[in-house]
Image (cartoon, rainbow, N blue to C red; front, side, top):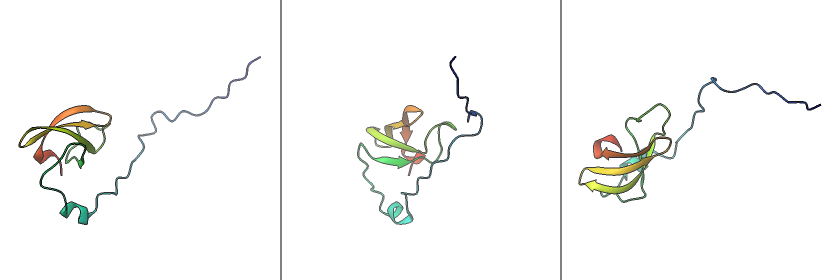
Length: 84
């Protein structure tokens, strides 16, 4: 006879909280005016409650917009005002 170990499920107990304390006031003042691909930026608003608060810039689409990858969301075109 096979015995199954049943553990209490964590489903419905809420999502884990992640801390992104790498962004300090000093670094905010040194944010480059000219952005480059492969730069992580902090989003002013997240696209969904399941996505991360940061985005990886992939390529510049126009002087004011970038194609970016947002973990747990996917690709998005972001205007410069949507991230810091």
